[in-house]
Length: 158
Image (cartoon, one colour):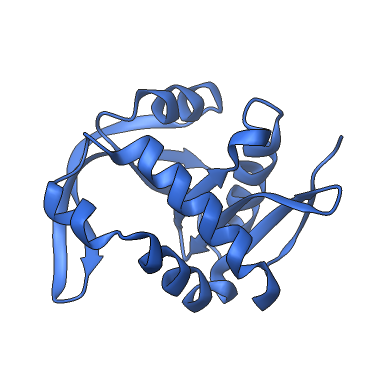
């Protein structure tokens, strides 16, 4: 089944939050500082998903949100697919849409951060033509500022 891509709507918040929470835990637990894990509560994903509707594009399979991306400027901030749709091609469709959005935003190169230990995501981006630009500390937003998270910066001309 093919995924349809569309801008997120407020009614997608619960589906986006559930996918984000599960996916974030899968890719980050054991790879990010415990201080970040402590503030990334289940509730925090529902709050953040509601705040980020305008930055979010969803992939819909049938009548179900199967995944989403969030793009701001030249950064692909979030790429997540529900467990039920992993390996189905939805992630590639979403990443292609994110690249299109970055180009549409007037940039010649897209970038994203991947937690250093998230080998599954790193392999996916490399298979998708992204290049590992090296290690850096990503400033993850927390209530009182930012927290440095060991990541790799991936980039791709768009």
